Amino acid sequence: MLTQTAALFLDAYRELNARKMFWVVLALSGLVVLAFAAAGINAQGITFLHWQIRAPIINTNLISRELFYKYLFSNFGVGFWLTWVGLALALVSTASIVPDFVAGGSVDLYLCRPISRLRLFLTKYLTGLLFVGLQVCVFTAACFLVMGLRGGVWSPRTFLAIPLVLLVFSYLFAFCVLVGLLTRSTIAAVLLTTLFWLLIFGVDTGEKFTLRNTIAGDIETAAYANQFGYNDKELALARQRQADGDPTAAQEIQRVTTARAALEEKKRTSDPGRQNFATMHRILYAAKTVLPKTSETNTLIDRWLDVGNDIAINRAERRADRRAATATATGGGWFSRFKDRTEVSTDDPEVERQIGDRLRHRPTSWVLGTSLAFEAALLALAAWLFCRRDF
View 1 (cartoon, one colour):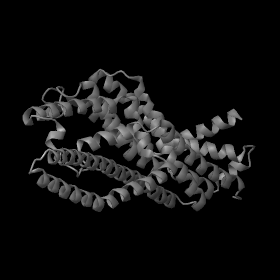
View 2 (view 1 turned 135 degrees about the horizontal axis):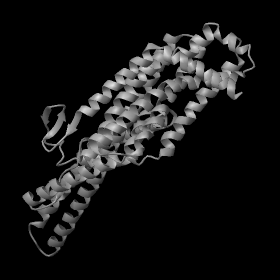
View 3 (view 1 turned 30 degrees about the vertical axis):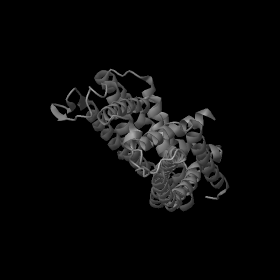
């Protein structure tokens, strides 16, 4: 059995080796690695070969060289090249594996041999993963050398990008295999898988958008509660002054009561919007839980390389410096300057901090477990159809 399986993989390797796209993608990956190696950072900003780009917010005074190269690898190398361009090219190259196999008559040559249909199906599925696996291994190894030589980052965790990118591709390829098996058309498999990919992207974008607005709404609700508490304290003080015989206390009570009523009406008017965003987020989060999480899987490399934590620490330090400067200039802290504020923008620093913390602390078991469960369901259905169908 092992000899037969090894022969199937050898045949698959020869097929990959004969595909021009395999070598095209490998050459393009080499160009991306060269661009990665040409980029650098110094005290003035970013460098590329001998060119200097002055950047007041991206330099070694604010970001270490090690963090720069880790961020470049995780967000450009993995987040853009491998999981968007590379995977798109890989899907185009591997989408024909199953349709050509079941529609071209070659399946008959395999079925007449003592090979189980399930093993034959899984071998063909793993053939597609082999395409991406070879590409990602070469790219990651080259980036590992660049990060070590240029940035002094010799982190074995860099190679965790290999299983993560393979997982992202496997989510899409499982769907592509099922469609190819049902339609026996490479074009239909590519188009429908692309639409499925866009659906995943749309749900992910919508969930993060509604989460951002939900967090902003929660902060607004807390701000309203803070304002009501502030008004209650003012009313208590004014009533105490009225009891002490202060003639101006009645006017103060009237002013605070009117202001509180206006604030309550403003909150009552804006409550439905916050509730709608919260409801939409619950629906999209439920849909995202069922679907594969390509974006969330990609960002795991940020956690494992500590890129997200390092960037969050740098941002927190800069925010603390700005708040200290504001407090010195105004004679108070954030509350003294914005004590009458109730509207919260979605790009507010506090919203950014909370959404970053929420996304970074989503359980890995939720990200990978639910995605793999969806993939397993697709593969089980495709394998059942392959084993039961007459070719």
